[in-house]
Length: 141
Image (cartoon, rainbow, N blue to C red; front, side, top):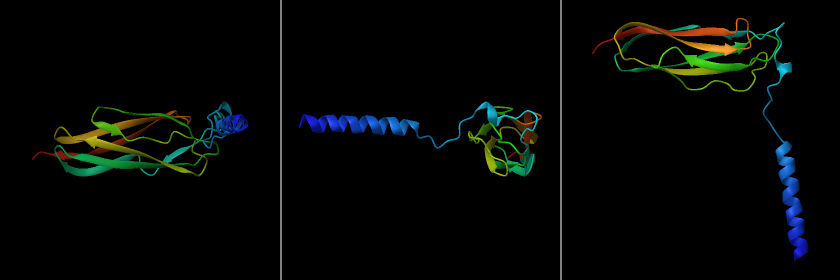
């Protein structure tokens, strides 16, 4: 019986060591950053015009982009220019050349009139910071 426990403990240890070595995500290392040949982030649109919405409504939009460069694209951070814009996430893993990604955002309208809000994307591109805009008219009720 003691032999079964010993074999069981050895098997658990081996499986634990092997599963620790398995990692399906690509590691972000210095060899992914090439300052002489940076990736190129190409957005389908840099300005989303939502036309006219009612006061208090939420405008949801997803900015789609492609890495048209020759090296992996790494997005370090995405920040909203104000508290009325909520980011729903962005790719945290490298975007390889030719691959696409998405940055979904939600804009809450709290005042009437024309508004133009931005989000900033910091990545290993040149220039390092890119801005995307949401704009439109908010009508009072």
